[in-house]
Amino acid sequence: MLILQLRNELWKLFGKKRTYIGTGMFLLAQVIFIMLLEFGNGPYRSLVSGIKGAGLSVDNYLSNLTVATITLTPTAFFLLPLYVALVGGDLVAKEAEDGTLRMILSRPVSRLRLLLLKWMAGAVFSLALVITLGLFGALFARIFFPTGGLFVFMPLEGIFGSFDGITAWERFAVVHLVMTVEACSIMSMGFMFSCFNIKPAAATILAISFFFISMMMYNMPYFRELREWFIVHHLFVWTNFFRQSIPWPEVGGSLSILAGYNLTFLIIGCAAFQTRDIKS
Image 1 (tube, one colour):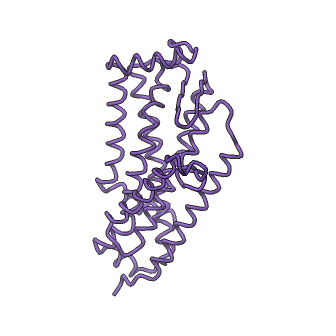
Image 2: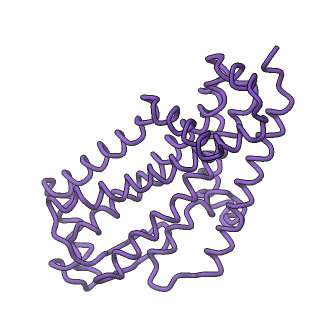
């Protein structure tokens, strides 16, 4: 029954047109970035100069993985939180607004079970969105750039890395797998606000506002000593897999904290939903 109910939630989620807004915008952003890198003289020269400045071979590292990673960074930092929060904010609040939630709760299904199924559907969506982001980025970049090594340079994060062969593909795949935790955490935040008696748009705005306020404070030099206290510090844990040597203690700590955030968001959301009078 759990599988059948989850399938029903997934059917409803992926049957909504607005669920695909994020996927469409991701693909559009990737197309624009890759086309500019291929046909824009300035961006292309800057990329080649960066690879040469690192003492690496342009023939090997000017590859589809390098270009896909360049497009990955801004989309993961700014677009991904927006669209997973949009879906998370819709999961409960939209059905309450449409009146379908009252009909669902008239059946012998507990509120807790219903919320867990909706959260699981949101987690599946988060995974699917991140996989789509990585897969289409690598495939579309392959049209204009050859396969080869992976070159990564993130000056703000202090990350510089170069990988060859199967290692490059492994790092690229693991980064997207861990990025799912970021997507799921922001989705959970939107889901929590969605459980309150507010509109879907308000739930999404609250989640996005919380994320960007944390990000602004995280990047301010005055709060540099407190960076580990902000959620975005742990949301961007996937960037550590682009380092030559992965800091496993830091990665494990961030993943544990994000698991705690997800559990906290879920508990608060369930507690708030239990107090709501929906069937009257």
